[in-house]
Length: 58
Image 1 (cartoon, rainbow, N blue to C red):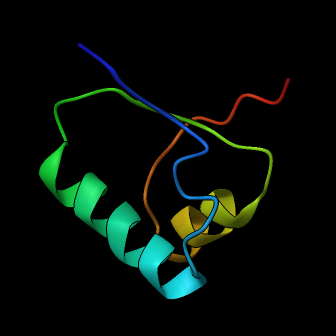
Image 2: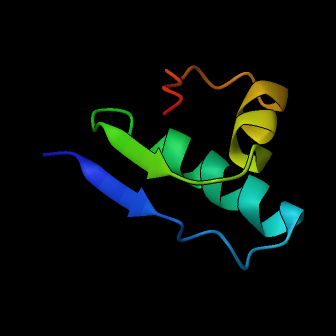
């Protein structure tokens, strides 16, 4: 079952966002995580941490 997160990180500062993305990557490897957002912060941090992801722009 996928985990869908829709703008849940909007009020996180960059340090908290980086920490939660690391946590998700480490603890939910077997799950599909879908992050819906209107910013590039998540993408930038995932790139910085070398976490593999698929990006779909709508």
